[in-house]
Amino acid sequence: MIKLNFNTEVDKTKTQEILTEIAQDAMGGWMSLPKKVDMGEFARIKEAAKKINEDSECLVCIGIGGSYLGHRAIIEALRPKSETRIIYAGNSLSRRELEYALSEVGDCDFSINVISKSGTTLEPAIAFKAFKEKLIVKYGEEEAYSRIYATTDANVGTLHDEAVANGYARFVVPDNIGGRYSVLTAVGLLPLAVAGVDVEKLLEGASDAVDNVVDVATEYAWMRFTLGQKGYDTEIFASFEPSTLYFNEWLKQLFGESEGKDKQGVFPASVVYSTDLHSLGQFMQDGRRNLWETIIDYPTDEMNEKVVRAVKVAHASGGIPVLEISVESFDEKGFGELIYFFELACAISAKLFGVNPFDQPGVEAYKSELKKLI
Ligand code: PA5
Picture 1 (cartoon, rainbow, N blue to C red):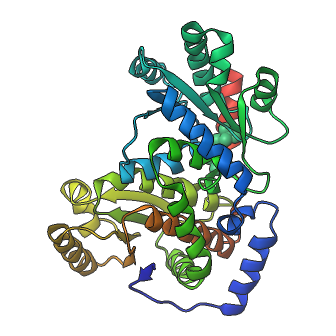
Picture 2 (cartoon, protein in one colour):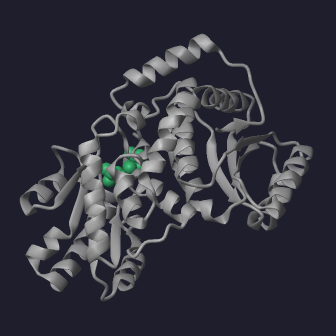
Picture 3 (cartoon, rainbow, N blue to C red):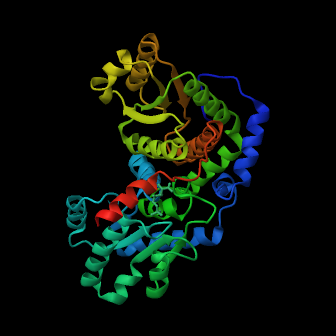
């Protein structure tokens, strides 16, 4: 169960309208996803993960944004044990990073999971080309193609067409689920299963959340909106577990891309304590008061728990609102629940700000400038 240390006034009628709108939205498929898992696709994911574990020392996961952050967040947080190491690529345009990822694979037996809903994104396309060439050199074309797993649209896109033409194993990003809401689809489930995460438990946590978190997600969304209206324009997600750094990254993408449009929204940032108490802690305590802190309180050890308590008192005395979201367990179930909670809260919050939670028109601006240059 997720618990909040605050409550706020909620307009129940408005909330109900919003929930209905989200459920009926063409991109609202994630809302019922944990209760409607496609068992055929799920079985194929498990089978593919088993094969990859058997024949690959490394799985290169190629993707960016919503096609990458969710599964990395869970893998980094839970540090599951697996014979197959996950190597990430295609999440920047840096040649140095690409060369580093290629050298990390080295002579390992490897497979590729290329993940792109549109199938046209530049960063993963470039990395995929490089790793595909390496795969063909190592195994020859036929075996190389049997080691490529493409997660993309069911019917269209460059990646889809190539996957069909070359016979890659294909997994689907459903039409009604956007990138940043897709971690519980094949986008996340295949890399997670390969990495040794208990994906059944993750889905169980998310499914429980469908029944349990509507009220708390609503309260948190209204609290964000209320603070935003009062001029608090920055939310700092704070955790006290270093391995959750990438979960914070996932949160920043979820909220930033869903809410930051039409000159609206709250800017999402993050810290990991106690490390960042020795860097950003000064600003949190005493800097410009345009921000609030949302502590994600994972079950932790006694010493760390004391820091949580100390930070709450100190930062509140410094004049910033301190919200706390407590998670019951630091495992697959806990993260399944947390993912659904934040997705729902984010969609409600974006709607309260009057923007569409499911598009990202602003992302196109840099792409068209880049196209002119290349
Ligand atoms: O949330 C989103 O929709 C984006 O962050 C996308 O996931 C990201 O841009 C990658 O897109 P694609 O999966 O089409 O390569």
